[in-house]
Image 1: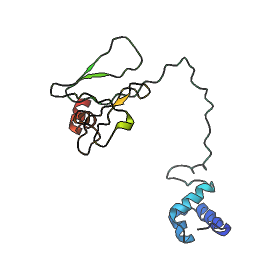
Image 2: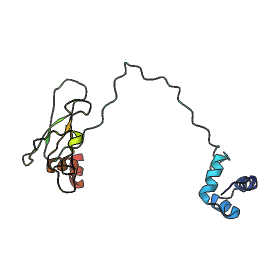
Image 3: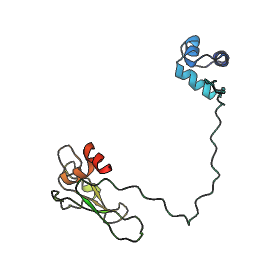
Image 4: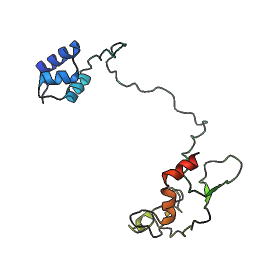
Length: 175
């Protein structure tokens, strides 16, 4: 659909009269409500009067922030929280002094069997191997579990229990 000068002029007039985008689209014919809204925004026509309020101002371009960059003396932001641990496991504290973020170590519950990792790299993974990442990806010792994966799952049974927790169990641990 082409927006001719006549159609744009009519759109502007109808918009100023307070017609809705749907009403304008019906009067113009061959154009959708969304096309009318898009054209109104591209033309930067003034907004509408809302019940009990003033007319919304026309859109203004976004301003870029002139705030200075963070000084190097600022502490780094807190890291994201680690993944949820399985029910019945305990978190082992590394030490009591403040240190940079260290991956927490978990002590599994009694009924959990921890598999011995085959330590595969990315190119060695197949459909039937566990794709649970172990370690820091930027370090040389980073690898994947590599144990036999469950049917229709990317993880072995142990890592599937870590990754997929029933909703009721997550609610219990959140309380």
